[in-house]
Amino acid sequence: MSEGKHLVTEKRIGVIMGGSSSEREVSLNSGRPVAKALSDRGYTVIPLEITNETLYHRLLEEKVDVAFLALHGGAGENGAVQGLLEVMGIPYTGSGILASALAMDKVMSKRVFEAAGLKVAACTVFEGSGIPNYHEIASRLGTPVVVKPAAEGSSIGVSIVRSEEQFREAFQEARKYGPRVILETFVVGKEVHIGVLRDKAIGGVEVRPKGDFYDYRCKYTSGMTDYILPPEIEPDVYERVKREAEKAHQALGCRVYSRVDFLVDGSGAPWALEVNTLPGMTPTSLLPKIARSAGIEFVELLEIILEESVKRQEER
Image (cartoon, rainbow, N blue to C red; front, side):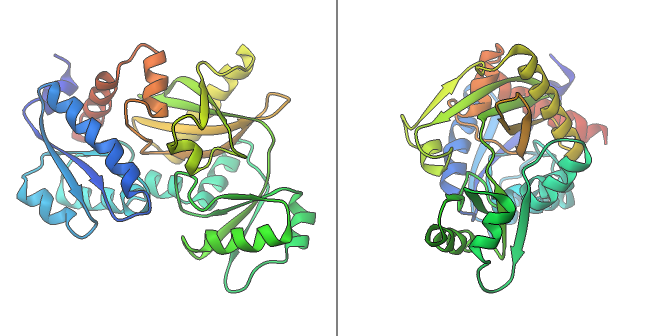
């Protein structure tokens, strides 16, 4: 028995899912198979389908010893829930408060990526009333323009626009999810997602959406995206993307695991998009797909995440 496994075998593991963000359903779809897989493996599992308001009391009522986080978006992924668990003294899976907050904030994560030497798309951030002048934005960033909220996941509120009319609609949609809107240069390239486990890249997947880009519909509608494992890029480019993924993970201060998303342009250069500190965890989600291609089955992936997370927090 590994040291990490010994730390969690006898503990009550609360699989926390749901929350109050726009990604609540995505979270439930992750949390339920996580809870089942760990329960089937013999762990003492308490599935906790919560709202932000009920989490604290449920943790106390159920006497949770360890939290497996299957939350997505909002307070579940931006460091707030991690902070609550820190205060309560409950070990939890994945990254800590600061890394979670940085990764969820696309403006701050871009700045960290740039400081670490990663390539990022040019952008401007708009905050305030009114709508920016489309022609000024297009002349500065080129067309099409990517419009997205500064702090959402699952591509919620993201649009690619090619006209002033589309821009106004897209901007208003993005602003539904917060006051800051990112306007960004569109990078043409293959979308490659790298899985990081124990802080090392374990492989990647190329996603080929059948829409304009890998949006919410393509992510969660069967048949809307083709997944290529390993990505169809040159071996030296693939190695470079994996090293860049580790760099992005480390630059944000992430812990144990993440999924790092890139666009790889025609010259083979990787452009960092974002780091997902709590990526989807259904058996068919991208990180489990990547892990399986590396010889790690779904329940083994969950055990590694759980054991490594608890071990590191116990050491602290």
